[in-house]
Length: 240
Image 1 (spheres, rainbow, N blue to C red):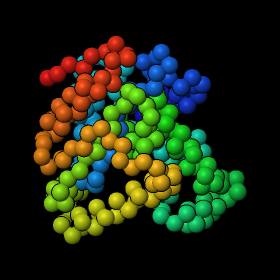
Image 2: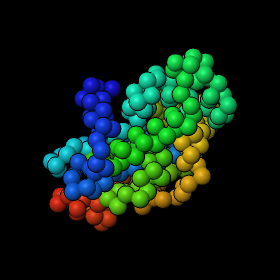
Image 3: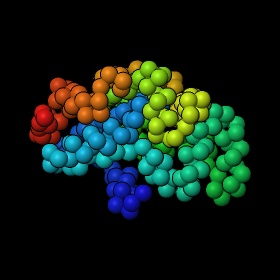
């Protein structure tokens, strides 16, 4: 991850006033994308950010997913890849066991890590002009007014074909991959205590098999306009 993004995350976490880059003490705007495995959520997120940034708004939109682990790891002084792997563990006893194996100096409790990750996600949502892919962003940012929460779904055939193409896997391998990643996402939500909260807070659910990538981006921008998530910032998203 580039130094510019790390510096941005560091600066945001040090601020005391919970306001977005639009100022006025407002949180957001933020877009969250929850997706089933095989829906190419990151692909759409980057295409959406590129399209929005063509409009030269007051701040550039950023796509964030794995970057959340890097910032969380910085706050905790742990290896980001270890943090990412730990959140894939469904067993909290195994989680604490692995952490303790680092030694007393580096040990951080499960609660400390979970709270830090939540705080990082919340901070990014409040800061605004971020597209948060996964990471239970729709739940953690559910109370932010200037937010658009999206859910991507698709038939299994579509998801399997996508995974086969993206990862050069055969059909059985793709199905196993989907099952594995879905379990990891459930483990993540459980670790940050998001599994017991509201799970269905979505403004728009899109079947990826029904629309091209460009059409999905068009739909999202239209939904942003209809929900007026940029109005408080005196900005305008133009239609194609």
